Image (cartoon, rainbow, N blue to C red; front, side, top):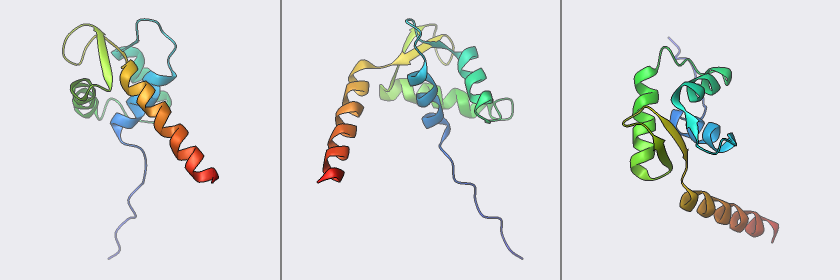
Length: 100
């Protein structure tokens, strides 16, 4: 009996961060728009509703996302400016380290 190789892909949280970062909306991305973006990326949102909800809540608790409207896992979300600038600095450091 052989087991199927596990599909390696980004976690739900990483997919959410990607979708919100790609959005150019001033007030952030709503949950409905976020779910549409995940579905367009090939993620089964209907099957994993609870997973999406907990991922959003944990990203807000970590400070990666900021909730602009609503409470809990509803409303609109955008990237936290502090984490966004940190990520850019880390990317610049890693790219400069790879060049040398």
